[in-house]
Structure formats: structure tokens, C-alpha cells
Image (tube, rainbow, N blue to C red; front, side):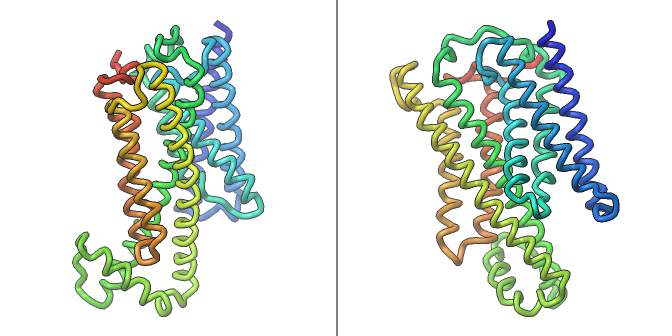
Length: 320
């Protein structure tokens, strides 16, 4: 009873704090008052509080359930939210002396996943239960934690790529629209990329547009680093899962829906790294691949669970 109450309190505190952080980011985005009232420092402190609250929530659930809290969809969503907070903490301490707006990505991601996990749809899953026989293994912590951390990093990196595309296409449309009657089509993506490179030396002379150029470069750099980290986690998760599958089901690979989509996810981001090796394809083109990967991750992580079939059906989504 005490642990359940503590978990309930920590859940509400973390959710409330991250909501305040998002509100602060909206204020700094639309009102530009962060330099006046120091709201940026408040949002950073809020994400730190959120991280420790979610950490306490997971530890509390681990203690009273007797197993690592990654046995169902509810616990994995909370762990995913913790992963978003962890990514922010790492970037915060790494770039402590410089302004870091990564919480504009991590905070909404954390509140979305935690909000869904604590919604009425997953009430039954919030009650801790005995582990399914297939999950009673030492590989549970290794495999599932690596996969969820990989999802968290890849989602953050993909969202940064989406932000890069929004800024780039908005800029390209504005530039070309000023010179011609511009009609956008996906077949002109390569043309836009080349046209943007030609116009860099002229259009970015003003301070405002030079700042925008620096922002796109920073987004591209952050996206690449975070996706690289997520790809490593995903690879370790898939390999450890294969070993676990061999112990549990007698085969390293069974083409289960979850396994298949995990492989598709891995392939998409492998293509992303391939595009990065080609200087003619990096930037907008690699960001397009990462944006596609954003949708693939959600299909792999959540969409497959809606079906409730396959060897991973114990993590399926069930309505109350």
C-alpha cells in the first residue's frame, strides 16, 4: 500500500513538472522572455526534477513487484519516458555552459508517453502482476532495456531531423518563392537541396538567416549523435533478444511481427548512416530517412502491440 501510494505521488509530480516545462518552452518560443525572467534555467531544473521522480517511480515499482519494471506496455512506457529524461540529462551536463534547447524535444516526448501510460486505458496494467513464464529470465533487463533506450534515442534524433526539415523546407520555399512561382513536389527535393547550397553564400549574409543556418547545422549534428547512440542500443537489444529467443524458443530468429519490425527499424537507420557517408545525400536527404524512421519506430514499438499476436503478445495493448 505504501509503495503504491508513493508510485502514485511520484507519477503526478513528474507529470505536473514536465507540463510546466512545456509551458515555459511555449512562453520562450512565442514571447521570447527567457532572457528577461530566466525561464530557461527553470525549465532545465524542471527536467532534472522529472528525471529523479520517474527514476524513483521505477525503483519503487521494482521493489514492490520483485522484478525489473519492463514486463508490460505500461512499465515500458514509463521506462521510455525515463529514457527521454535521461537523454536530456546527459545533454544538459555535457553542454552545461551553453544554452541547450533539447528539452523542447524531450519534454513533450516524456509527457506524451507518461500521459498515455497513466491514462485510463492502461489501468489494469498499472497493477503489478507475476511475470509471464517467458519473461522469467536474466535477459529481461538486458534485452528490453536496450530496446526501449534505443527507441527513446532514435525517436529524439528523428524529431530533431523533422525540425531540420521544417526549417529547411520553409526557408527553401521562401527563397525560391521570392524568385519564381514555386510549386512544391517531392520530386524536387534534390533540386531544393542543391539550390539551397548555391544560395548559402548570398542568402545567409544577414544575421537572422546566418543564425538559422547555424541552427540547422546544430540540429543535424545533434540528430546524428543521438541516432548513433540509439542505433547502438537497438543493435545490442536485437542481438541480446536473439540469444534470449534461442534459450526460450530454440531459435535465434522466428520472424515474429515484433522481430520483423525491429529488423525493419534497424535497416532504415542503417540506410540513414549510409546517406551520411555520401556528402551529396547528407543533410536534407538523411533527415528524410530519419523522419521515416520515426514512424517505423512507433509501428514497431506500439503498432505491433495493437495486434496482440506473435511471440511477444504478452506486451500487447488491452482495453479495460
